[in-house]
Image (cartoon, rainbow, N blue to C red):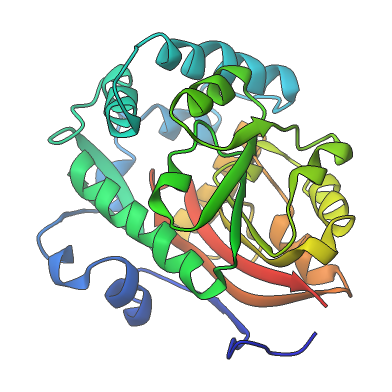
Amino acid sequence: MGERDGLKRTDKTTSGRNEVILRKTMNEATLSELEQLSINDFFGSANAWTRRILGLDTFQKTRDINQVENEYNLDKYKTLLAQNCANMEEYKRKEFELAGLDPNTGKVVISIGDIIYKTTVADLRERYYQLIKSTLAPYASGKMCELGCGYGFNLDLLSGECYGGEYSENAVVLANKLGKDVVKFNYYNSDDYSLIRPDSTVFTVHSIEQIPDAAPIVNALRTQKEKINYVVHIEPSFVKERTSLIGLLRNKYIELNDYNRNLIDLLKSQPDIEILELKTDVFGLVPLNSSNIIAWRFK
């Protein structure tokens, strides 16, 4: 498969100084309004991850299906489903409230490249949702399929025929309640990938991070390749090319949480896969768990 639709392959590691990303996806005009933090400010004594990463406090998760079931289906989504909100936006706002954050003025710490900022939840949301929309736009197809879509909030950001799959039963129930086309889906069950419809772009947003080894995902997508135009990931993952201090800390954070270790290297190693775009550490909802952008297709 050649370079169709005017797409060109890019393969680069980005930092907070990457002018293209800041201008196009991070609203460059307002970056100066954010409070920039030094790495010492962020990793002060109040940050539990300081002691964990240094090995002063014991911390190690095993990221298996039981962990996902307990953390997401039985905790996050079960609690959210019980709230009886009126619409998608109200549920999202409630999600922040349940995490102890005012959905407008609550203070959070984010990262853009390797630079750390303090901002509000409202600002984080604006930047993050714009990143999702602008990342997917060049790869839009007749149908947009999100795997690991939760209760379908990201589907609400897009136009056209949008559908998805989600492991957490309570999230599927909530998505259907909100009128979203979401079915039960397990990344580890290859038969579940039959939900993908012809002429689809498949995308993931912070869901493959829950799968330490991405090989079962790539292999299962391969069985549906005739239906897939593009695959786009906005995902944290281990990046062996990281050399900065915060980059090395990010890799350690991923190891301690048992998050995905191999998505990028695995895709690079597949002879039947063409990587169209690769940018690392573009935006972090939290600075240690920053999103990489990977767009690819089967040859």
